[in-house]
Length: 294
Figure 1 (cartoon, one colour):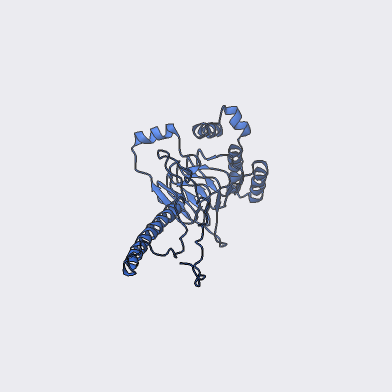
Figure 2 (cartoon, one colour):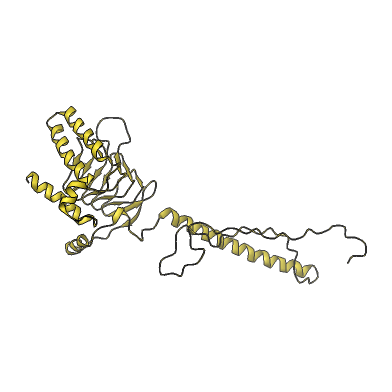
């Protein structure tokens, strides 16, 4: 494939993934992610010719012009797109497949000082969200999605979606036919590597723990009420027992995730807990009442 065909292919790939793109001229002149890829191809060719110093100088010039740092030895496939681009770092032994997308602030870095393979390998069609860190000589299978600000330290099977620190798998993309794949490609992809309905696994676990604690408090309160009734019957049929228990702080209204859109939203539908009102303390009992009082 000639150089001009590769350039046209790069520009067309931007049209397929960025709805803000208006013309080929605009992309060629104003997209730093495209510029960084073109500079890298020159630097990589110089690196293959063993002109390592000149290759590093070209890469450094590209970093100064675009804000994107790509080591000349990194291997990058076709139709690679860096959206926005500022702060992206791609290490020396990184390998990136075809049709991959990286957003701003992404790091494909290493975790060890020894020579050899130190950086990630990305399969085809991988999307890495803004601010995500993919570290070490790990492999991301085809179609992997990494959520924004995630920190990925282990291999990811093909078609999975990962979020969190450290990144955890929150979804496995079902296998689809070739026709479904073409339709999905026309419709687009998950912007920033995160679907709108993607759950946070940590928040989901803690939310269930809060529900469990609340249910346990309710059972304990019911048991305490029954004990008071028995105590009142044994004390001569008193109508109510002395309210000497300290009230527990309520978890009502506390949420770690927002309710689904189809549910009615209330004032408590926020991430966090509503302001807690202090209960009014009961007046203290006088152990020695004055004479004449009943």
